[in-house]
Image (cartoon, rainbow, N blue to C red; front, side):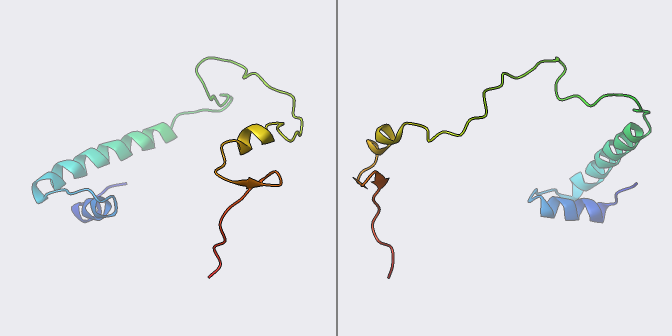
Length: 95
């Protein structure tokens, strides 16, 4: 895949990046090098290679999946400017 000046100008416009006419030619070369490198990655044989999420094999600690009400209602409502009947009270917004 090859990119020309018009494509670089369009990409710069979409990304809201100002690229002057003098920088267009060098940017074309840089983007073409990047795309060539990405194409080389597609040629690598990855059959049998397990997908990784980290370079270190770890297990995240897990908690029990239990449904609770939190048990903090009174503490949370202390932060509210106004509460009624165990709920936040807010002003009416109907016009």
